[in-house]
Amino acid sequence: MKRIVLSGLVLCSGLMAQAQSIDKIISVKKVTAIETVLAADDMQGRRAFTPGIDKASAYIESQFKKIGLQTLNGAKDYKQEFEMTEAKRKSLEVTIDGKAIDAGSMVSFSYQPQVSFTENSPIAVVNIRAGEDVRAKFFEYYQSDKNLLVLVDESFRKILPNIQHMGQMAATPGKNTVVFVFGTTEATHYTIEATNIITTQKLNNVVGMLKGKSKPNEYVIFSGHYDHLGVGSPAEGEQHDATDSIYNGANDDAAGTTAVMVLAEYFKKLNNNERSIIFTAFVAEELGGYGAQYFSKQLDPAQVIAMFNLEMIGTESKWGKNSAYITGFEKSNMGEILQKNLEGSQFKFHPDPYPEQQLFYRSDNATLARQGVPAHTISTSKMDSEPNYHKASDEIGTLDMNNMTEIIKAIAISSSTIISGKDTPTRVDTAKLR
Image (cartoon, rainbow, N blue to C red; front, side):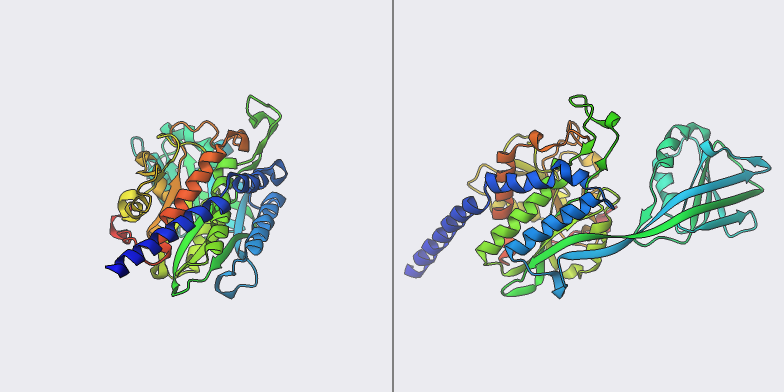
């Protein structure tokens, strides 16, 4: 009995020490300082392939070094580089049954410098017919690895401008060509001639880690994406300041990246993690999640115990302060573990209230989740009414820094039993994922 009482006292004193430590390390002052740097105008919106994203990367790297994180798998530095290939359409000429198709009725997607097809070439003709789910059919053909001539019913012409403005960028570009032609339903004889400008550039995630003491080959990940939309035209600025064309991305996702850095310092100072913790700032989320996809390939998913992806936590959730939601809450018991560790506090984790928006599949957690990892995004963003989402008005002045600090503390405390090895979340059932 004495041993039980003593161990209880030790546990209580440990929790008290943790509470005292967290208030010293995770402070509003610290959170605001980091957020202010990442969301500053001189970061120029942190768009991929710009000096702004390089500046943001350098800042995150400097913070990881200051904290004293190790590099991942003995890498020479915190940069996790990968190549992205971009294709820009230079010309596209299509004739169908003797009629030249005007430029305003077609669009092509290809990573080949030169394209030349006729009806005798290895290319299939497919249709998107009136009444079909045009979005689903478009992505089915767009993501195909076959050469396709897609004939789209005239009733869908209103979506063509959006498709024509889509960029072409991939980490592993395909060798096929897909051409969409609107307003034509049949094609017996046709020619397709196109030229594209192909360039390859490098991007990088920023990755650091704390080696686990007793379970070094079991990993817990904290992540956020540090890229945003860059600089638009003054006309795209908000009404409060028509000259403001910088998309600062204070909430999306300087907030999540700030949390990753603050949590890194916190767990480093605690110095008691039994499992290894990886801290990563992803690039190219806004382009399609390419940074997270590359990162995920460097790990054995069986060794990843949990992933906390932090996305837009700078505003109050629909439930008010001291609350956040977890995407895919029902797909593992991770949310239950987190809430259990917060018993006695005012903080509450909720299931995702916007299931129709498929947020579980739209952020950087998705790649590992599809491999069975309990990988979830924690957010507070009111996706049905967030006034500054993807606007130039997403600036630090719109954030609730006190509430954001409390969210980061809640994440730190709620994750403690997973990091200590006491709790292991159930895996995501990949057979039930779409």
